[in-house]
Image (tube, rainbow, N blue to C red; front, side, top):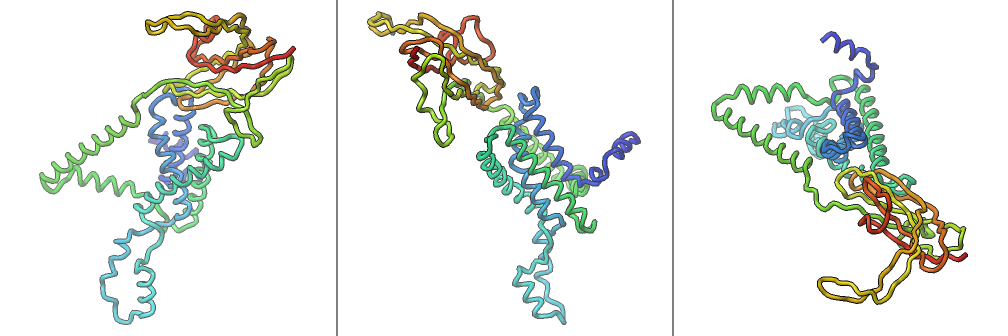
Length: 369
């Protein structure tokens, strides 16, 4: 006990004075960032419940705490005296003004209103931050979103703490943890009747079952389809990435820019390697092949020569995307040179080809000498 007190005493005074609910907000922000960005922990289901609380509740709670640092009364508590007859000598104008304003001499907001507004404002704040990020070079990605929401929450928490410290101690808002604990302990462990005891047990079991069911549904979702995707894009006149207007005419020694895209839907973190190759191909017409027990005649593409131009590597978490701009400079000349981007999750074979991966994208170009 003495050692723990000495450790607390080593903390800065503002940290020691920080209200318990605001300290919990900062702890949750730190835990969510660790769960979402730490190399090992981000692959665990822990990031799901923390992320939901972080996005749907924490920013709004910190903002409400900054707006309303004072304690509030519930409408029932504040309006208990409404039904009472006014005492003799009460100023009629004052009574009429009180009734016109709702008859509720309230200060601040109560706990239920604070929780409800926290959810509502969080749902509004997070998309607004994403909208702002959409017009920045960072875009809407995991790290920028985490930084933006965390920064907003920390700033709002600091403002809330300072505003509470400026109020008299008896007017500050606080979460009555000890009162809740004492009431729950008395209700559960010291029931008035056996019927109350049985109802308390059933209620506790129901709550535990509900929490376990929701936690399992969130932390162990169905895997669904697992796949990766690779594609190429270009940049239009407005700076937007589009799947159009690809460069198809080259002069030997000339390079043109193109954007490579990779999406991860494997339900795990994957180390990707993209191998860019150029191929000299020939079209052999009227080749007879057997498909579905039937003999058909098709045109077959035969790779006569292949050269590797470049390799790109990246690591993506589930549902993350990667866009990489690079220059194309074919070395082969002639018509119908085929440029192929081969995507390999995890490992690359000794001889990369279109037959060794199911994920690839290609582009036909003409290269003049």
